[in-house]
Image (tube, rainbow, N blue to C red; front, side):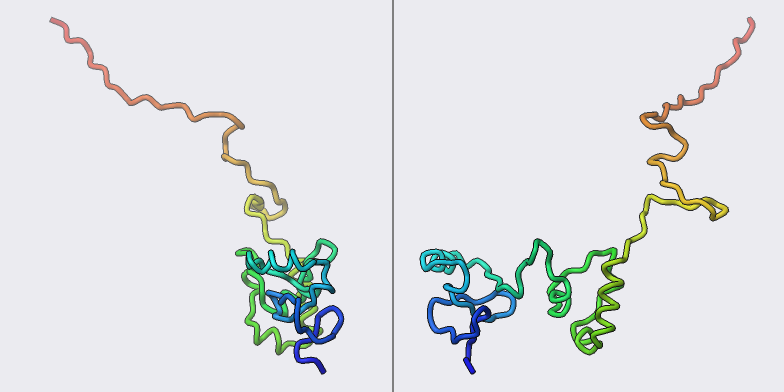
Length: 152
């Protein structure tokens, strides 16, 4: 068994290799479409490299792998789905799939929608209640008091 097997071909990685920034496994530069000049330029700039298991596939990120590794940042609207990495690892495959399905199908409530007082209808709240679009508030003049003229 190889000490550092290649992600692509499972052979020992000795020279002309690049390490995945995500899973820390090694890949031959020959197994990845990368020539030696590009490999040297890549190492000089210190860019992150992702192997086939960690990278984007079919322009969609494999969310299950990201959730398993805990390498994600949850949006504020989905904070109630956040769990620790140890509790995720301790869950069964069925529980993980169920949680992943709930996470994917969750639609956060829209803040612009208001419910009528009787609860029968939901409508989108207008930008300004009681005003037409483009209508401005009229300035109110200060109240003045007029004094009656005194007769001589």
